[in-house]
Length: 405
Image 1 (cartoon, rainbow, N blue to C red):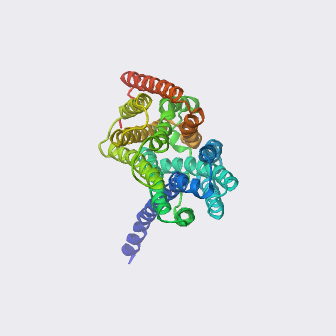
Image 2 (cartoon, rainbow, N blue to C red):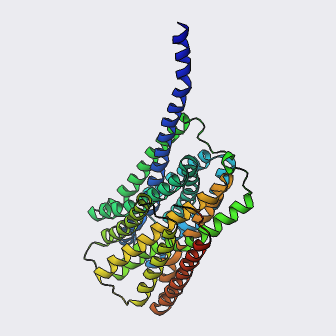
């Protein structure tokens, strides 16, 4: 009898880690669901712009302002959310961000007047910033570099599928805009509810500073940012140039909402696929060099080619810029995870995404300028700077291996 009891006691310690591992896996899956739903809610508006323009009779300048004001809320959301998640915990910031994103989506569901859209997009930006910074850092805490990479890929998938789905729905009828906002809200509710339940079951899922291994915070911070930030400006400059600006310079034969949604699906879909391939093939840090070079190529060609852009060249640009965006996002996030002190990971992730999202204003800048000549100059300068970033990274990697994959 004693031996049986001893055997039962011996089995208990191994059962708890297995249960904890299962709960952590469910939590990680929940975080990915939240990032997918958040990416969907953040970007599905791109596919609705033509339909909202027709229904509300809004000019291009007003639409660009509504689209761009999202970044005004997003940037402080990223910076504040990242640091706050380091201090008060990933969960609290993630849930506040999810609620803000949901409330903004419901507000825009209720009214598509310009004032409601402006306020809704502003609040949405804050909520999305809180979610992205906290959940990406949380995924890194749970899965290391793989967690950071997968989080970026899943977020990009949300960016891709949301506009395409909303474009299809908006093309189907007058109620399409309302239905699209409703779907985004439902996805947010379901993903957040599942993750809240998973977080309650996952023992010890909150990050600690034990993984810092005594590394000086300043040294780790500088090293992380010096590797990641040179890639950051081109991430969403490439993506938004692809799915916002280039479709306006093409004749596709599709209804405007479907054309916008398809462009977003191609660009962001390629972005997500390139990240998954890079992970499966174990591409090293030079993938960031390739991403910057592809971004430079996309800017240069867009600057050189007059409007209208042929369908074949336009699709090729969507693929090139989407691949650039994906590789740059993946490598930047992995650079951070590889070098950042864990107790500052949220803040540094927020800083990286903040610089990345400055590129979100590129389509509005080109629209406000209006002049094709000046727009071409801006894109040419961007191509030169992206090339410089690629060459600088390649040269540095020859001196400093930094990381293996």
